Image (cartoon, rainbow, N blue to C red; front, top):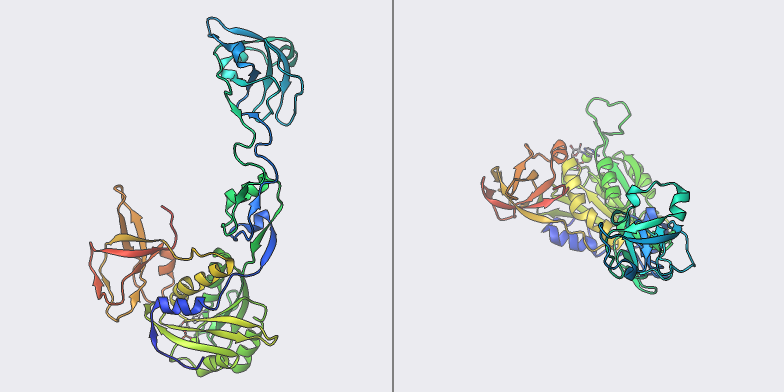
Length: 426
Ligand code: AMP
Ligand code: MG
């Protein structure tokens, strides 16, 4: 790569070039809960049937169904209660003709029984729950049971040897439940990427430190770190590097174990060359102008760590909205790719713009907007207000970005436009 290359490229081309540097990371074994949001690396196979035994889906009485034939409230069938069976216990004594076993949801069906009569269809609600009475007394059945009624059969969910979750599946709460149900404590997943994050600029101040005149607090490192966490990576905050060769070089060298280095600021044309010089000297980097707004300048390359590792390096613009939107479009797909996820494309829907959106400079306009749905199910987009790339509160107000094409000079109120959903809460 050479420095600087300032051809205008599309968002898609920039993303393609970037993603070519990434692949999924090695496999690690993680405790179930920590694997949430990672991708399963191997098929998970059931080591036994689920349920492991036929069992009852209701609290009731285990009976022989033909003993209940013709039962009604007027003419109940009376059965002798021989035992009381809780979930977690097995009864080996068969249920004989004229007998019933009081049984709780989840308890295995005793031999001989072929139906469960729920409490509601017996005189149970009328009987005292005195234990001695339950054991000795008879139960009156008010309704005939069908064969198999209220029985959950062995293996009706999962058969021994069956793949319950396939490799490549995103681990969500339901997958974690399935893993636990077959007794697993750990699962193999692709490792989470460690993303080193560095802010650059003499004016940037760490929140908590005193703000000197002319200085600003570091928004970018924190918004980017939060996105890294949200998208499944592990942020490693390197802090702030002053615009000097030494400061930048030292800080960048702290990224040597990261899977990706993300810097912000110092990539636009007016910037002091020191940032660009250092980025180029420490590896190879391209400086692009991407046909998008906000976030036209972007740098991408690989930083050569002192230990010989090549660390992909994404250089974001300094303006807080530009850096967030650029990370959304380029950093998020990179994180997903390292996690083994192919689903990095955001949901895009059509919405009716309620504002005029002007887009005269031939770039794709990702304006911050609020998408809402009316009672008829129609989606509307309202701009958040001023769209300057330094107005970070516009990101905070938004739940979506408009996608006004490069060659479309404006969208009028009432026009349908594409919007990319950031937070899909409806
Ligand atoms: P630059 O890319 O260095 O030209 O920066 C563009 C704008 O972004 C300038 O107004 C910077 O002060 C601002 N900026 C740069 N880095 C940060 C940061 N980490 N947090 C907030 N604003 C920043
Ligand atoms: Mg700067």
